[in-house]
Length: 483
View: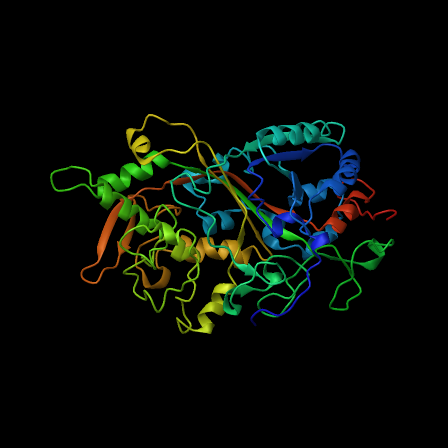
């Protein structure tokens, strides 16, 4: 469909949609359980006015809140309201079918997770806190945690973050490639601008349709707090200006990653080759450590291209001789390289239907390559992966299953994502096309493991106030009172 003019109700959308709060360097994510529904609704009513909207960039701190399906049920949303939430959200991330889609098997099975799995504590809410610095975060966190007990809430887990200066723990520049979203201030080429309905509910998506969202009978909203369905059904639109938030805590084995690429590139006499080591790592990722894309500079890192994102693959590199087809960044964002008709608007159209807004934060300390190879630092580090999408199945799950974990992605044979995908029992394979005979590395282990995860709903601000105003006990029919 391409992008069209749309006016987003930014004052009703939580701020995480519009920005990742890059200038707020300190962040913590509090995973909460609801023990008293009445007190929790009172707490929600009290903090609703403090939730950061997408309307303006926050100056000192930001706060956003999201619910799992169990959280919405425990706070009192009636059972019939869940019928129009997505099945992925309602049933959760840990069903056997979903575990196969996401590759959460064997050592990464949900039964082994520290949180979000069937044997862990129930997670009902995520409170996302951001501040300019650690001191500001401490003040914000103390203020919010001091309200939890009176609010009928219990802190299940605190996930801290680290400011690694825009680099992820493996040592590569991160956060470069984000979609242009219609209705936001940052604009780009039409073929690379994604309709807002792909990320926030209540607006047309790339098919020109409204993604399914929770619509309530008008009688469940007697005070007319919620907007009405723009398609004319008369229903109260609980989903409008909301989004689905995917959260996965991913531990990265940085020493193992660099030991593997070092071992795979040693010379015939067994000596390390630092240039070949970094080259293989860059081929696996798809960008050089400094951020420059291999599609534009295949032979060496180029600081001038550290933030480069305005390129396509088909004309420059159809076979992947510059940037391997199986590399992480090419898989996760194939641009114009896939059928139908690679290099055309048809290929870009397919790409636009499978984008996500990434809003994650790293945790743990950074390691240099030499420190990683020395292996002395075994402390945990990784990524609190967070993304927003309006259709979990067609966006996040499609990318994970069909592009990242698929060993036959784009005419490959047995190559899954070399950085993030689960490997075969004896290790994975990574193919590097060249102008001559292709290169292959084998026995690629899994470098990323799952510590926990869940699907959340990030409501609009009006919907938050609606939820705070409900009456009744968990699981019973309820309706808001007042406005």
